[in-house]
Length: 488
Image (cartoon, rainbow, N blue to C red; front, side, top):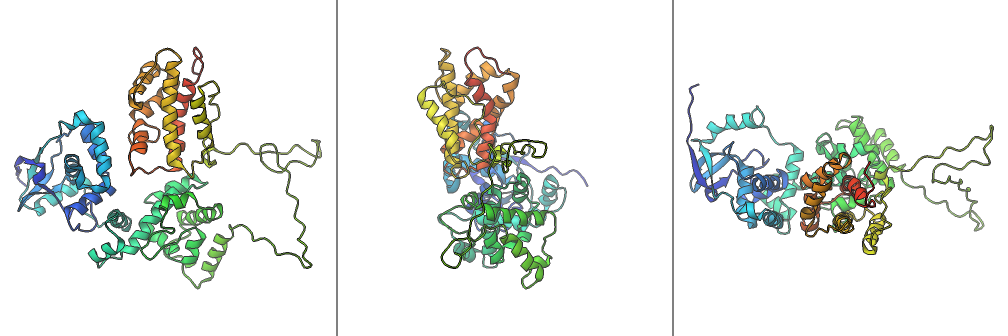
């Protein structure tokens, strides 16, 4: 086929219109506002906006457009164009407006150089562009979106002004409630604090298909066993809590039942064809019995005559809270009891401050450490993250003040002094680089701390706080060392 160059022209951003049939959106958007909302919620347009501000817009891959009645329709490059539109007018995305404005304030100087027009390549029609767009993204022709992706789409459309009933009216041929259930269940599963950490990765990934897992939770008996209950709109109950909050408060017995269920799915012993997921089968009753076996036993009724049955004496525990203590002194016939070691830090509801000596800091900073040591991360992850940021900033200022070289300003500014003084210490390089260079999705980084403290839309999970603590811990311990003591 002969080379046929298409014109590349410069077009005002306001004259570029999003493609409502864009392949990223599983179902045609009714208008550009809905397309923007979905792209921001599911395609990380905020990340694209951040990169444009930080590194400036670079048109090495120009958008592909086709002329329409009022300008040009963007067939390829909808994320970039969406980011530019929102940066120029944050009110176009009400759910992310505050986050976009915060980004513009942070990059105030760079924002002054945002382009008002960009170069695009103009093709005569959609059919001409399709094979090139498919090659850019997959090397294959476009594929239908999965049910999980459709669930993300419909859930992203919900906000203070859009209800499930609105979506039903807007998409009369779609089982919207089913997709809402899929979306909230995925959010719930991704936030559960599993004892098997690998299960959390599995539950949050595409490896677990919601279209398969719904065969389990559609049965109310199974749903109740794992702590799930839906209302008529597909939302989790109680409605005054988010799926993440419900997951964080999940009782241990229901979490154990959920772990068993997910383990069976991961091993493919449960799937859409399993008799255990069909009522009125022996396998279904056996599965229910197993899930409910994790519930705590019901107390025995009083014995006849009003007397209580004699309780079984509780075994004596070892010093560390491990297994039962031995019945007597150690001897060849009575070996010393074996006590299990300390719990893994990720299984504790509080942060592990082992090795952090804050005994000599000023009293108000010491109180912060005491509160951080005591706060329940599973119940109050946002408060714990904010307190951790405060401790990091205050410890840096305390450290330099004690060495007669005080620093002032916000965290990003004073951290420059930390990098300058200690960035070459081998033991601290990883911590310092992660804090200073990580993005807003990297717990423990300055950007992540700022997002948590300043964005009402930021989601913080308990494991995010634990990860953040592991990132800042080496630096914190160094900053608390007496002057002259080296870092190993």
